[in-house]
Length: 541
Image (tube, rainbow, N blue to C red; front, side, top):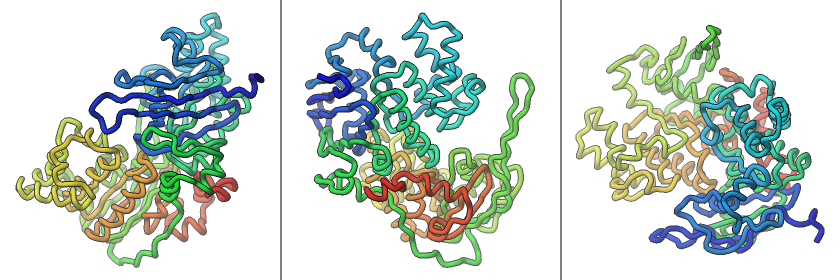
């Protein structure tokens, strides 16, 4: 057989068993597919579909509670399901490598990034000299388009951006030029321009290193941009596979059709009526972060630079921009989690910037925040009901009234009242985000700050949560500042959008006008970088 035509990876009828007593017997049930050289195979499906378990099985990194109960995994002609632990250690990094979803978690926080790339070489090629290792590290960092590698390699993970950390992970994966690279949701948390750069980088690396890539994603925009083949999974089984053109334009399975229908598309709401008196008025807000090194050098970062905007009663204002543009810093300032250098924040005719102590604590019930990761923002040791009533009780509501209000809110966000007695880990990601929305609404705020509230959710769950936001806004009438890096989502939920770059608002206006007739070059760059907007994608989607 011509080895150049043989697949790098063959997954044959793979099954992975779950512990007894769960809702299904198998996490992965009879899955089969192939990955060839210079090919990107996209494994797509919702949370719980078995995508990440399949990838972990290939890397032999399954949780101890999971066991391979059937099937075979062949890597470059070698059946790795039968390999010893020592042989698997040799294969990881050398013949197969993995890029994880959250690089800040996957990287060692107390090691310089250059050392972490070098470690792969030192373990697998101990004969390499220190100079040769350093030269290879710089070469790899150059390959993944990192600026000034000789300087950047001495940085720690927290000192570089999210996109740069992801590139470091890719450089580590490429260190020994493995035949197979597995990328598990590598672009989910990245802004659109960084996401576009990473996807282009994957395609370039295929040619240079003659590798194959298994890309796990829930974003059909990403699939339409880079996939050579698509495998759709649901409840541990492959329900459909084929070319992107076939799967995206003529899906045969109802589940695939539902996923495609749930992909956010550019849709615009009717223009919001002008209001003379805003509920939130931000004037000339400036925030500067200052730091100093052990050697006495000082550094200033202007996170917000004279930012001004207003939000009308019942209006949703979107804040979009790349990582580091100042979006999250703005959200923290609006809640006084950060103290601005200068500027004013007026809510209900009171300047929030001048409040402190008890006055600030009491006033905060008027402005609440929904965070990006619902699991991290809920106390894992407290029942959901305790989290929902905590704020109202502290502000003087009786416990009985707070519990009744929490029960009503649970029904309002589409959950049952008896769910108040459960812990956060007993809910899905989408359900946890609904609980966080209910917790914010429990304070009956005039304004909600939503910081990337749907970016970590599957497309179908995203659609449900966005619909929920819209229904709640109509019923309750709160205003919202919606922070997101996904322009498609912003178009669905925002009345107006402010575009931020390097701490400044470079453009602000009605959503349809801003997206269809952008005035600033940076806005045009963001729109061009949105997944699923290229020529290939326009044909597919």
